[in-house]
Length: 226
Image 1 (spheres, rainbow, N blue to C red):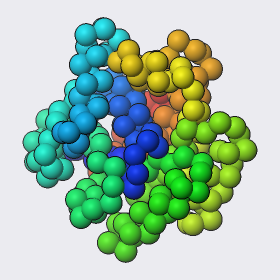
Image 2 (image 1 turned 135 degrees about the vertical axis):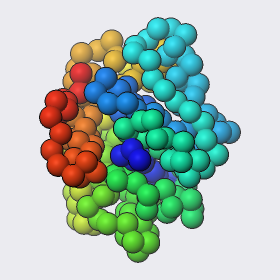
Image 3 (image 1 turned 90 degrees about the vertical axis):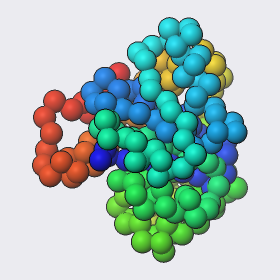
């Protein structure tokens, strides 16, 4: 069974699919990686992968649509890292995904409308038996450093870990994804560095999960996105 990293959220538009596809892009050169898109109606990551291939926008990324997380997990014996992009809402399926994941990432914006649901979702996962140490938040779509700091403090005050760094609300990220790139592959160096910093923090968490799964440290794994 692979290491399973799931991206969940109570609401849409907070950066869930953005981070999931970026992890796919940066982790794929160091381990066999697949992204399971569990939202067949929107299929946003499926369409992004098609655009990436059509535009030759970067190294190939494997994205597969599944009806359920169980299907994705059962058919993932040939990969080391399975990334699950869950639908944006809390449901029994969300709880089941989190319970079977080695790491659960929840992006959040800086507004109270984003932060309150994010904390409530993590609280629900804790009540369902998901270990707190498997839960981590990521601050996304912020406009200023002050917004980032406030969002980080809110999640930490609720008792949850927050990844280092944040993702700005910037048209350069949207334009990159429209071309099939990840947010570490924009045409603006400062944006790439910003995204790279957060993804490096996430990769360190993934590496920890890989090591725990393997029963010891793994050599040669990358701690820096590029």
